[in-house]
Structures are given as structure tokens and as C-alpha cells.
Image (cartoon, rainbow, N blue to C red; front, top):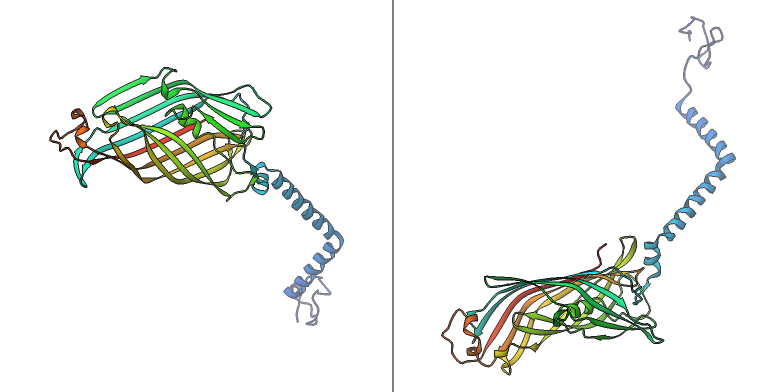
Length: 348
């Protein structure tokens, strides 16, 4: 072949022109790949151990940082749910929202609509530690302020309750030395007492992991129009997981279950006239257990449905509460369709 640069005749197998020393053709792709592969193998044979060491160090560092994360340790190790509050917690904010419509029924048919109610309550509560004993510790929950806003029919009333009012009378909880709930005292008031009932529960013993469930029972009282209704609950709790809350971490607890009503305080006109009570509805809630403070610092609970109160004589209902004054002296049912939400928490 002839060199295209200097027209010198060269053999076909020669890559460089003997005269001008210019390359006549490029090395084959296969030859280039072989050269690169040989260079890489030579480099790895000399310095490959450095890559293995670096990968090992990175894996160890990632594992250490992953395990040192508080959330990771909580997920792996679980948590022992118990009460050991410091006693100098900031005030809790408590609030309730109730919407209720009411009818009277006779023989399964509407007798007359009764007064509808909307009730808003907001309060500031302080949890204070009492004197510690050898057997445990007690805490008192008291109201700093409690405001009640009531809508009944077309009327509106806004009241700040005095501290000696039954609704806001202080409530007490008693814990043993291990942080287990022993007793609740004066916890039947519909304000402070109900808030206490939803801050302190009986937790299961031992370490709990995400997905763990347990049963719990609690009681509280609710004011529904003129009626004081007591509730007993059987709630199934679940440790849903862990999350950051403020400057610490919390366990997210969810719960739902069955609630059963009873008449604690009927109005004067219905005394000795109630023959039965039933509830068709549901109840559920979500709470945060603060890992640092070792107690619930937030709880939101909702229940709604139809509450039926059976009475001997519908004629007993006061005329001013009725839309229909032509009443027969027959047994019937007072039906409440209501939704009630309670929330108590420490602001983050």
C-alpha cells in the first residue's frame, strides 16, 4: 500500500510508515479493550485493597449512625410505657366540642323535635406533683382557667367557670414506684376529671414494640343538654410507631373500641322515669407518649352516634322544650344524635 502522507510504498501489515513515521491505521477496538482491561487489572491488583477497606469503613459508619438514631433505637428496642412525669410540666390545653340534636320518639315515630345544643369548652390545666411516699407518687390536675360557650336553640351564652365549680374541681392520680397507675380520685367531673381520664391509662407491663396491642378500660362523664351521662369504655390500643415531637421523640398510640352509656344525673323532670339507655356509634382516638417526660402529652378522642334514653311518659318533657304541645301520656324515647371531641395536650 502507498502512504497517503509521503507516497512511500509500505507493506499492508505495517502500521507506521518507515519514512514519515505517521500511523497508517488505528489499532482495532478489540486491541484497545484488551489494553484497557489489562491496565485496570494491574491497577486493581496493586491498589484494590484500598477500595475494599473504604467500602467496609463506609458500611460500618452507616450502620453506626443508623443505630445511634433515637428513632431507630426505639424501633429496634421498643419502649416500656410507664408514668414518671417530672412534676414541672408546662400547662396543658384542653378543649371539647359537642354538637347534639335531640328528638322525642313514640312507638317508633317522631313525636317532636327538642332543643339542639352546641357546646365548646376550653381550659388551661396544670399537673402538679404531690409529696412522694415510699410506695409511689400522686399528681393533682387542676384548672387555671375554664371557659364554657353554650348554644341552645337560638340562645348563646359564654361563661368563665369559677374554680369551685363541679366541672373544674381538681382531680388526682396515684402511681406506684414503678410508674403504674393505681388510682384516680375525683375523676368523674365532666371537665378536669374527663381530661385526667384521657391522660392516664393502665399500660401493659414489659417492653412494647410497633404493632403491639392491648386492652384498656376507662370511665368518664359527659354533660348532654340536661343529662349527665356516664360512659364506660373497652378500648383496643395499638403502638403505631415512633416520631419526632418538638425536641424529643414520642410513641404514637391509636385506639378504638366499644363504649357503654348510663344515666348518672337525669334532669329533675325525668327522675325515676328512665327505663333504659343504649348507644349506637363508635369511638376512636390518637395519643402521643412523650419518651422524655414519660407520660401522655397529647390525646385526641372522638365519639359519635345515636344515644337513646327510654322514659315512661313523654308527657313529662317540659312544654318549653317541645315543638308539639299535644302530648299523650305514653312511653317513648329521647334520641340524641351527637358528636363529641375531646383534646388535651401540651403545646409544642
